[in-house]
Image (cartoon, rainbow, N blue to C red; front, side, top):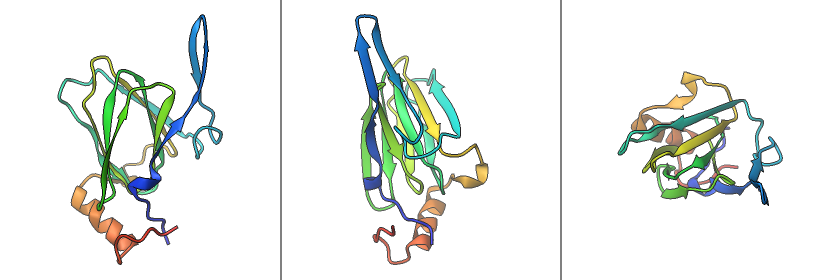
Length: 149
């Protein structure tokens, strides 16, 4: 049976920050800093003011989002609970589990959002319609609200 995740399974991850007189350096190593093998990396930038990104969920994909520059909000929704996380530090990542609807907005000028993903792009792994997302969650957990792990 598939696992049913909630917004409580999404969490901030602190990345190593090395500082000296020359500046800061943060590195990311799969399995040490993120709980999955990184299979895809992409970034979002030059987002027009007032725009939203994402607006979807994933069936099995794990992601870590990092604000490399500037800031933005990530709205998380598991069909029952909602939470908003502000990302604005390049040494902090937000782990997003599968079956979580996410919307990214409030991009500051010059914001850059880096995404680390557990799988390559596969359109069939997306929930693009919110009602379809809710129905899929009910199919995984017909009782509703019970975390299956």
